[in-house]
Amino acid sequence: MPSLAFDPKVFLTVAAEGGTVATYQARQIIFAQEDPADAVFYLMAGRVKRTVVSEEGKEAVVALLGPGELFGEGCLSGKTHRVSSAIAMEECTIARLEKSVLVSTLHEQVTFADMFIAYLLTRNQRIEADLVDQLFSSSEKRLARLLLNLAHLDEQKNQRRSSPRSVRRLWRRWSARPGPASASS
Image (cartoon, rainbow, N blue to C red):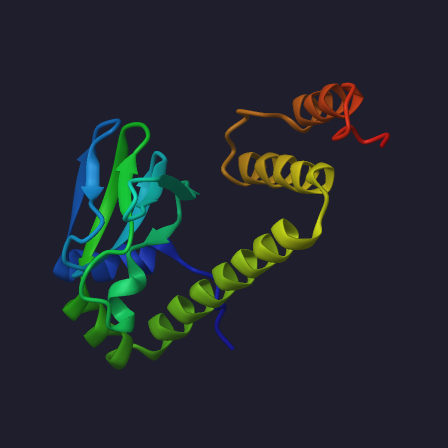
């Protein structure tokens, strides 16, 4: 049985047939809330922030994305307009794949479809775990999980922004501080 791990080379091969690759500068809008939802994006390099703005004008960050992540896939579920904005946090290289090309590829290439679905299901499980964590875990546990996830991401990407040692040091500093949110309470 073939591996269902998301393979960016396969995605980019498909993107080459019906997509584009572009560079975005820091703070450049990739798409805005309410823009037409007509493509899926693959973040090749850089970081992207996803935000939503309520009718009252309150803005919330709903996701921070790094290299190797997909976004904009809401267009595949029948959404005609974006429910969030995507903004480059630093210089980014992003592949854009038109919805029509992706849909036909998903129908025609079973291996690609399996890989794509496995990626989405894995990400959905991570989002569910984050939601459960947010609802039921103490702030200390949430912070510890976040720091461990950040350290793990850096190890995966071979980017040593925060080594496990610096994460542990940050956790010790935070948990030692006085107040009701410290680890000792």
